[in-house]
Amino acid sequence: MIKHIKYSVTFPSNNITLTGDHTLEPGITAVVGENGNGKSFGLCEFPRYMLYGKKALRGPAPDYKNLEGLMVFTIRGEEYTVERNPKFEKLTGPDGAIIAVGAEAINTAVPRLMGYGLDVFDVVNAALQKQ
Image 1 (cartoon, rainbow, N blue to C red):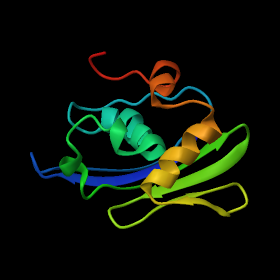
Image 2: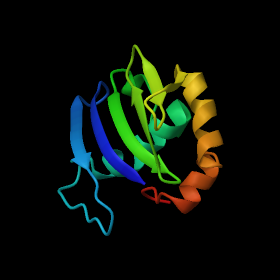
Image 3: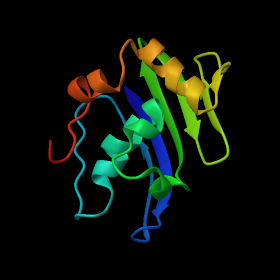
């Protein structure tokens, strides 16, 4: 379960900036807003990226070169935090110990913790626009 997400990105291709800082509570959550406000990015694309890295992005990687994010989530009752920004990426575990540093290390650790990869995540956890 995702508990908290915080992100900031400006897309150089269209100069749109999206930011968010949201705490999600257990239960039903509805997100509403005008088109282009970042609903799909913040709740679908961003968590995919935080868990699985650049291969989870919908657009070209250069569009996300200044993406900064933090996500707190639970797996089997244990809380984890992943931080990604252009200069540093880190995954910490329930006791605050660092599990992985760097994109490749995180991209390897998360599927091991989750028990599945991006392909299964998309089927069981996320509905992407136009799919």
